Length: 93
Image (cartoon, rainbow, N blue to C red; front, side, top):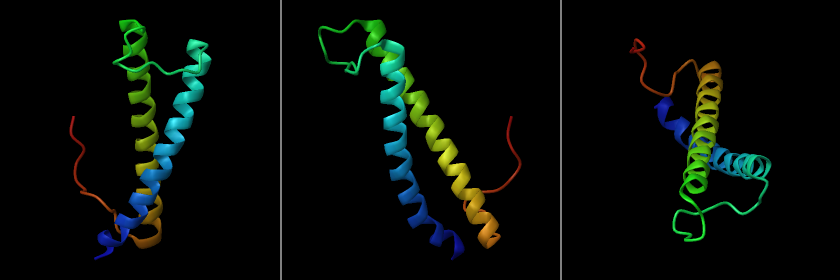
């Protein structure tokens, strides 16, 4: 039951993290590429390197921000309730 209470918080945190990641990515791209237009894969005028670099940076930023948000929320939830909201077990690797 306690794990079900976590879901609404996770949905809200995911939305906030998505917006934060988008803002971080846009600023990073503007800083690194010296342009505000983010290249899209289907833009004929953009080169391969530019399109792939933008996509990889976007994925890294979104993945990192999601991991931070997920871990922070899970830790806070655990401290409040004493229940870890996901599977527990031995780390693999």
